Image (cartoon, rainbow, N blue to C red):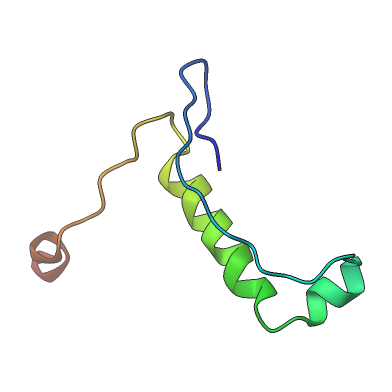
Length: 65
């Protein structure tokens, strides 16, 4: 997956092991589809402002809230 922006880089490589040929119906029924989907969504959120991922909250900061 690529980061965004003019300084885009390879942000993460994910091996997708879903059978081919793929139809939308078959993907939606595959048990691994939603895990791959969530991984992509997490990546997009993490890199939403460019090539440097936003820092994740530390456990200390979470406990303080």
